[in-house]
Length: 529
Image (cartoon, rainbow, N blue to C red; front, side, top):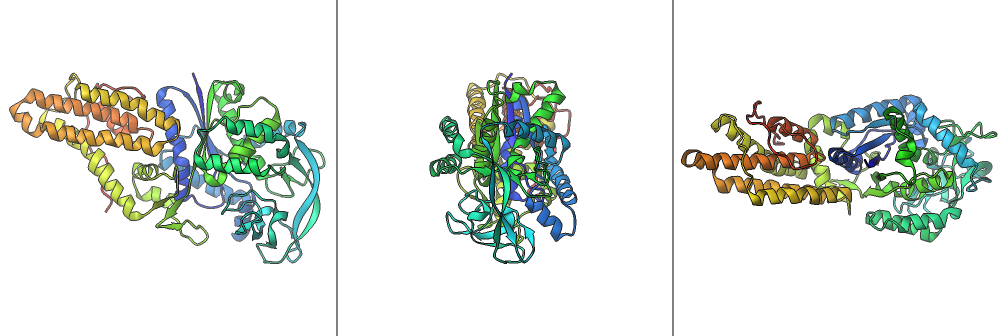
């Protein structure tokens, strides 16, 4: 049995989720549901990122504590993910004691390697606020592209920064120019790992183009050594003598959440962790995130795993999305230009939401969300195509055939289409082409409607009842298999169809087992007005 690790990016617990998060994270649930349906052992893990400066900033703004802020948003995230059908095997948080213990033990071993070095470096200090500033509290211009940036990462060009490299560095709180004092930190020597990271990168030519171009640029331009500790009071303690007043820098512990969560699941399931994360394990590892997180998954995480020296498996597949815009404009949480996931999940059918962000997923380029398109695609595709095919077929059987579905010999053309679809759609899902996979399924939905129309069961129920039963039987066979194929994408509606037709949602060709439809058929999707 192959182990499938699906790691969804860990959202910062400093504010609500918006549609950009949904678009980037939904592919993870599709992968997890698909591989479970195939019979693989799946570890679908993620959690809330509860450390870091953004949370301390929010706590200060609300006169609260980082613990209270992160816990509030963690609970909100859990609620949203549950409503939208995210089937995590474990959704945890970086403040969980199990994660802290795993990270601490990982770093102890890491510090004994040849890739960790103690250095005296400059640290930002605001003379007006009289305090040390973390990188995120430093603002200025990006030294690479010249755009306005914070001191940790440029949102425009994606460059991962050190605060002392920011041009015209100022305090984000008061706008005062900064001075830089000396402090001692631990560094991971990425420069020493360049050859190994290049070899790792060259083995994955099938990654998405954004992951390939970002990673290639970082390696070609020369990897800079990075600090893995910081003078903070909120985070995981550095497990080293002399560093009692410092914390592990957030990026050196949050990406380890995939491992800590998987280790927790292994313990719960009675499995050796090396069976899942060992270099030679029979596993496939997916990492699902937005393009702003690419370097942390293609450079930082592999570097930590290599430097650790524990024979751990490096990432296999990088599923890195582009951005979602809103009505043609970039999403801005600070300007309240966003559609919040919580409100969307409360007002609309979860499968309608999932359909839109998969059919319009930003897999190769930025895509736009508009209310007009959301309504249009729900009403035309989910209601007008798929819902119509299901409801017209099954309500016909209820009304005119005494709820019976005949066990017919499936038309050869219909059977060939379905058989090919499992292979084709499965291959697309496995390589991260979710939009193409969903469109291919909806092509057979449209074929099903055309088949129903051309065979005219409303006429043959009078003129040729056997032909009528055969038509409804073939349509029911199509519906059963489409429900299986759609289950990773639209789990709620697929579960309804499975119950009506008495099928399982395993990834294999289905025969309709229900001789009679035992339940009243409800509307599968409702129009958005």
